[in-house]
Image (tube, rainbow over all chains, first blue to last red; front, side, top):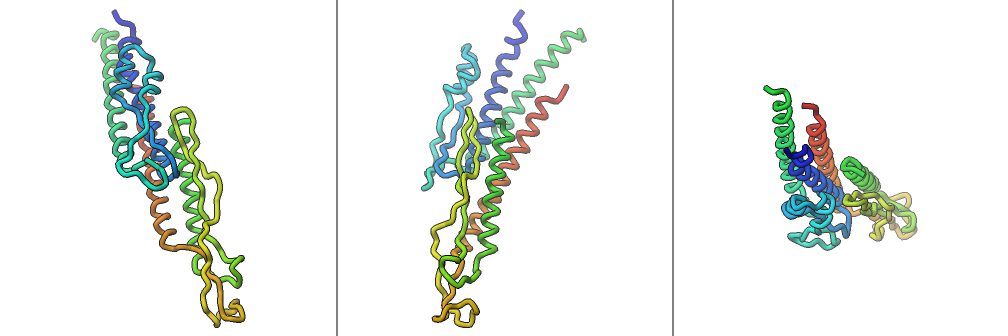
Length: 117
Length: 128
């Protein structure tokens, strides 16, 4: 029988990556009017793949963090495009909620099994 | 540093920016006897503060813009010089209004970030 850590590894890792990505997007939005700021983002798919292949979540995150390529570069060197950041932020929040509900589903299945209902 | 620090410091920075805009607009169209004492518009300088994978923003300092005060002929003005000229405050009102809109929009975005982060965290810690 797999340990609880193994059971929760997938969704737990995904939730951690999602919350790190939320932090990054929040940083981008906070720096929307700072000249010279370069927007950063996490390639979630690749980071998740690396985490599933046994690497730690933090390492996977650092390996797949990159700078955003702006659709239209601005004169002050800032690469934050509010429309892009806001959309990705909203999308990421929904994906966080989805992962969270999967995790809660797993927990409630285990609880039901323990109670023997 | 967490997501709340990021958003709240950014909001403070935008608030400083809004205050300078308010000061500039309040002093627009005021007249002065000499060029040196004429009001010049102020602007905050934003600086990114990086910490691990997060970045927030602080106001490094507030500087005066290099816009020059304009001389206007107004002989009836009590502070006019012997040739009848006064100096107008160096404030570009249109630019200030645009800056104000952008500031308000950025502030709102940070409020939205704060609300989303708060609800996600509350959902995560809620006991079920």
